[in-house]
Amino acid sequence: GHVRDLPKSDLAIDVENDFRPVYEVMASKGKVISELRQAIKNADAVYLATDPDREGEAIAWHITEAVNVPRRTPVHRVVFQEITRNAVQQAIQNPRTIDGNLVNAQQARRVLDRLVGYQLSPLLWDKVKRGLSAGRVQSVAVRLIVERERAVESFVPVEYWTIEADLLKQGGQAPRDAFRATLIERGGKRLDKFAVEN
Image (tube, rainbow, N blue to C red; front, side, top):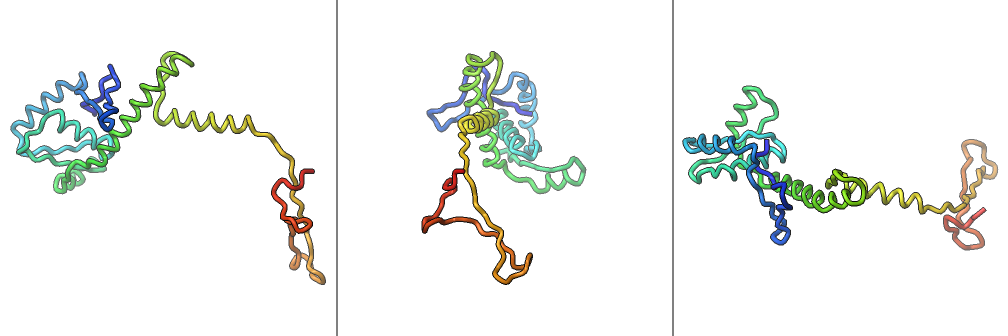
């Protein structure tokens, strides 16, 4: 799991410096980090096999940042979709580097969570109920629902009609020569949607 996170005590996002997150090692992971540091001191290489998604990529990156892998020690990222001997061996034989784009995608999600949560949650506590929290997804979804509800409430129905006629070509036979005509012009003037009111 995650070994570093934004501290709970403050925003921990440097909004003046490209929204740079300020991480700290999680209190519950201090022992794990110490054990990893010790193991890495004598390692010829480091293989990181966290989950194959953006969260896993970020965890791999956070581990390298938290344990201060020595420069001489190569760091390999291995990815597999199943925990079988063959899949794990294939991954180790085909390592790659940590994907910075996936790490940045996870960091962007985390930064947005923090910014939205820290800005909107106190407003919810003040206006609605203490203990509620706002998230980057829920907040936008609620806004869309509110905007749609406001549009429904402000809707004023307007009566309009479309005039159609089912016709048959002169000398034609139904149904082969039948067609439907719609009134679109009257007196040389094109009719808009609301031209026929009743």
